[in-house]
Image (cartoon, rainbow, N blue to C red):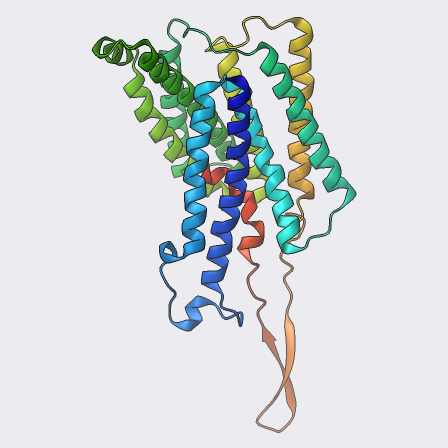
Amino acid sequence: MVLISVVLALLAAGTLAVGTHLQHHAIRSRDTDDAGVPSSARGGSELLVLQPLWLLGLGLLVLETVLNVAALGLGPVALVQPIGTVSLVIAVLISVRVFGRRVTAPLVGSIALTLISVVGFVGISARYASTGPLLPGSVAWLNGMLLLASVVGAVLAATRAGHLALVGVAGLAFGTVAASAHVVTTSVIATVRAGTGVAGVVDLLAHGVPITLVGMAVASAVGMWAVQVAYTSGPPETVLAGLTVLDPMMAVTIGALVLGEYRGLTGAAALGLFVTGAAAVAGVLLLARFHPCGQERPVVRTEVRRTATSHGDEGPVQVEPDAVDAAETGVLTLHAARSI
């Protein structure tokens, strides 16, 4: 089961990266025609949802959610969720390939550090993390954390709080949702396998699982709201790095402390998890810094053209630069498309 959950999580990471890229490519194609003319200048554009490429991307994002939920149902959250970091690496590689960016030594080093660290962390987790019986009060704890993340996130998003605060609360919300998805999925699977019928359904109701489902939906919506507000108040690299770090960290913490997934963890293994986890965080931060698109910033420049005046001589005319293509930084919004 553990091996299957790892494979499903890897497939989910790849699907997320590709699906997000396709949707941003569709948006770019809609907003600008082959001649580079914005859609607004052409008197409108077709509905985005009618574009096959955008629909394909949406289908891949839905498939990613299904794959990740299945992975969370078959393996410990402390093992599955950190694998999502690989989606960032895949997104960077797609950006390099599609947009012809230059591959630099720091970028290669960042990718290598991230991948090696994630492999090390997952390897240790596969040895020690396990899904056991729910600890007393664990569902209640999760429901309380979902409520707290939703309330705090909504307040921060509505008041347009600081950039880092918004990124932080979004990461905490998504990590809690992932842990909750693991609990709900494993509980339903256990009930079905036991064949307890009505008694099993009553048991799920008694443990507050339906409340958890509602809390997951609300926390996911609030997390995405906070992410969108964060994009308006700071650099997208910060959003990307923050979510990629905080989401799995929160999920692993909940898995260890609330769900008891590291019951047999030794001191040496705990040290290994700390070292590989810290290295993965460093790799993600470096990736955000050396991302091939993230390094490029729109340069405000004025193009001067000569044109004839009424007196027959020529005078300068300032032309505003075109907007930077958002599709090229679209991979920086991966976690806005993913709530679990």
